[in-house]
Length: 579
Image (cartoon, rainbow, N blue to C red; front, side, top):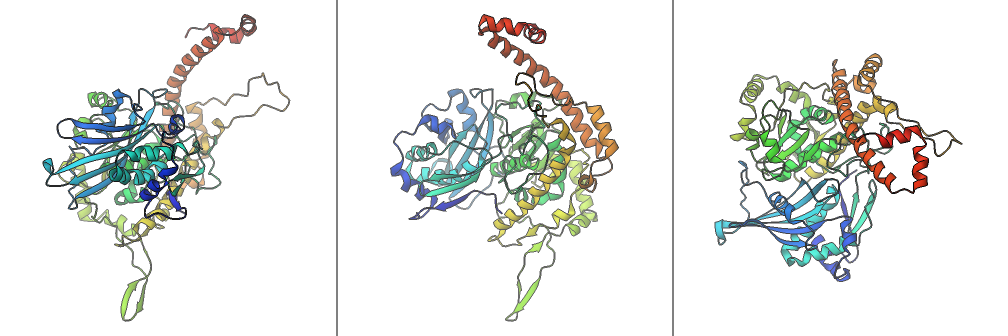
């Protein structure tokens, strides 16, 4: 079953989705309701790359919706990085690409993040200055709904280049008519004569604030780590990301990457294009579902990001913050030397083949010709053997010796890390993956099947890893007939040492014992101690803020209510304690 968004067309069907949006323009109000629009979108922008002025925001709808101090960050993040050493060259006169970025937004509530979904068009024309031009159509939203905004961009982008800025208001009118987002549900969103059918991420799969803090163990499928009843329903962010397609060249390393995400390690993802690096970061975030991704992730990060100056100032002895950065500029290899884990994905050429060796296929004969009638399986057994061939060993030694700086001369898919993974690649899962061979026609449908296989496996892997934390996440309901004024039973306290001792005695469970090495407890030890330390720091800050909020509420209460509260010694101590 595909988790990708789908379109259904109302009668009469238009020639294209963009034409459908234009055809539905007559029923759109002249001025869309601003409040209704903000339920989904902050602003629609058209940004042009000007040779003299740089990135220029040509249009913004609604006008003034994007604060002036945030315009530079949005504008610089809306174009492929000019410093990329693997910038593509295309024979065609027009090249379109879609990607997204995530920026810290000072104007949003709680210092949260702003997501930008970009439709970029590069046009080569010898009659133009420097032989070409670039322009981007951008949807800005505080919501990580890539399953909605990516297909919406496929309509808005071409339409904007066809009819100009009127397309922004036209599409904004349709978006404003949508019902409010319902996280975790399948929604039908009309856009002209088309209907976009999308699954929104569950409500607990992302945080509203910029810093997640001690909420690493919040689950999107519920407050206890049990496998969801229907694994076909999205359980986390970016469930539509093409994990198989973007990590195909290093599939055996997915389990190490999963561990790095689980324990919150910093990771630099390098790809030739913004589309590939943003897809890779989205895929990594989706690997840990239903666990809330606690690390700061940037699908497309540039040197113009306000946070770059701080990261660039870190020395080799400094600890890099838990972040997943997607980049195309190879300058980051030198600027962020203290980041401990680096992975390169993607291909500089959109038509290059990165197919793994395919097992023999069933062949039927007819009319004297041999015809492939079945799809092949990816031959991971042969791939594993090839790892120990003399040529592969020499290449591995050379790659390790040269380090990630070898990407400066040639892009290749690899991972550089000193981390020793606990989880073994599941060969039973890998052997179920299918290969479309060289057929581009069925490659996309095969990716859907393979993504479903991989996503279900990692969902099961994550929920089994989280199972020992279950008792600390289950809230106990008050007994029947108890007073509503009595505080509910507290959650059991989490002590890392006791937790690890108990876990070591009873073992990891049947599912994990088959997939983890003898040092499996190290993964829990890393996660448990890190969680305990972060919770202590974050709990102190949260308590300080909570006490301040209590005093603010207490100060506006009537005098008799204040006296009643102060009559309780515990409440009085809480209100009178120092912040």
